[in-house]
Image (tube, rainbow, N blue to C red; front, side):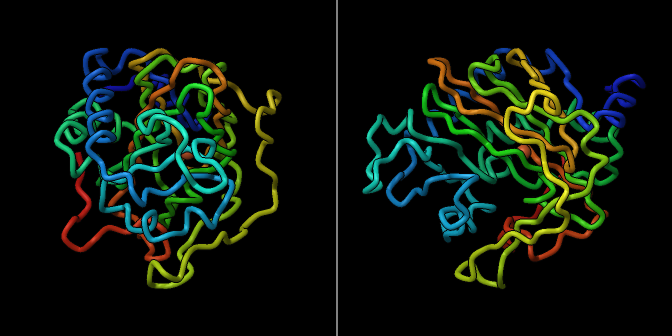
Length: 285
Ligand code: FE2
């Protein structure tokens, strides 16, 4: 076991767990350098804007086929109305997704360690599969809010069982847009599911409403608690846990990396937006 009994108990009670000092600072720096190299070497022509508010913008082919690729997505506030990126491109990227952990050797190494495999086992993942990865920049001043959501909305298994492994690569604070979580909120229902509307990318996506019980409002400090986490911290997130992160209006970036893991014993429906090409099967740790 990597986690102690008290940590597993806290995970079950709260639906999240903060593990400080899990990753060496040198490993955080290596991942950040690698992400910057990927952005510099990417062909950003045709990259799309990532927004959790505007469904249409995330329904395009570039997004829907990114489950088997390494693709950059721009910040909403980085472009003007004509879609022109008005900033240095390296400072305009919102995130890179969604198969970094399988297609890039540096991300592969970071994502697959005996310690992480042990933590997955401690959380009850019997046949863990690394489903998707995201490098999140949360850029100074324009880093966008991520609206309150449950990860199972976007990564759905039967039974539900996705677990988020979220790594702070830099210090995350309220000022630069840290995570906020609803402790114990994972015992509530799944509110909605984001689905493919048909079998091809051209069919687009839709939200299917499942339960009207409202999620906490962004910044609701009665229900949501901020997780200020130093660089090197791992935050584990239950797939049903409501969480949110605010915009970054500070002058400090808040880089993070996340991997979502499912249990290979569960069914992964073809209605999930994220599908992998046949030549790239999911792998464990
Ligand atoms: Fe999330």
